[in-house]
Image (cartoon, rainbow, N blue to C red; front, side, top):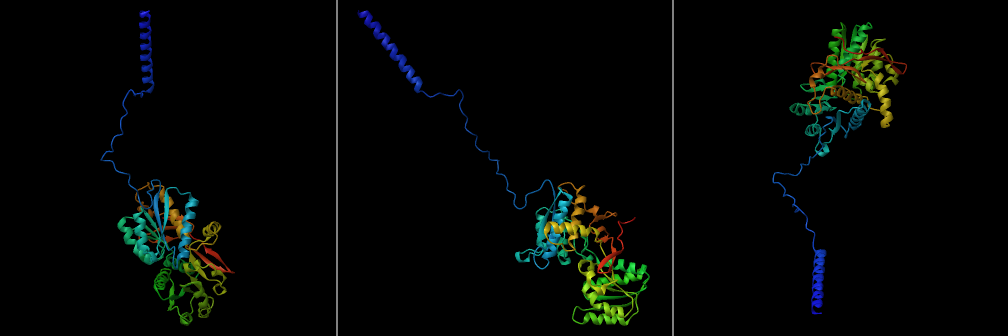
Length: 398
């Protein structure tokens, strides 16, 4: 009996021990096979990424700056040029260049042409299109030259051209030479001239005298006038007193030529009025009956009319005539971009290609002086419209 009680007490003790062991196992924490490593402390050499200010760098396109008056008195023509550059980019589907606009007339905010050029260069511009005005081009030239950035100015002032600065505008000397040459070819031997005072008149006068001499003609009278009431009529009367002459050049706008037409023709019955490229910038020039039979030389309007239609369809208004300079500057840049590696300097020497370039204003090329030589046509005002009487050459023969 005593032995049985001892066996029962032993089984109970072993059962209690097993139960205690199971309870401890159930309440214990599972320990992983390998300890978890703490993250390493940051290395002293590591720095946070740098944040680039301004326009981000573009590794897929070359940067081109457009400098134009987007505010102020010339904002209309400046915006028209800017719109034309956008249209050219769309028409050519250009993917290798990026054109950024800079306002050259932002003087109220400390800007201006010089500040616009500096900002453009600081933001990576490798080529500058513009500016429009000669004084602005004179500011931009030295800044761009120091940075090795070429400038394609829209000015018509040949004096702003120089190393790295090119003039795309319509130089008056070329239109004078072209129309005088045409008149001489039509049998005119004696010429007269009516020139406004000022820089444009001075340069037109010089070009006129040289063109007539080169064509084998003779200048019988050359008079200047102030832009003041009565001055133009008096100058026209002085020219008429020196007649007769076969043609007379009026180196001013169509309104001046129309006002002077009657006395000029009294000085020589049947004399042709001659005009410059300024006439082509006036949309209503052909509607002036006083100018019937007049001749003037300018860039071709054939492709420009198509451009103006597309421009009007996109922007809801017609362009200024000078807008074609912005369009053609982009066409030239797109052509050059074929051999212009991304991030490299603009291949300026190729601007001197003797075969030149083509645009909506026709063929042009840059001479040794950096001024665009243009293939010009001669138009005659006839029946309330203009008629091409001598087409522009399609290119430059060598």
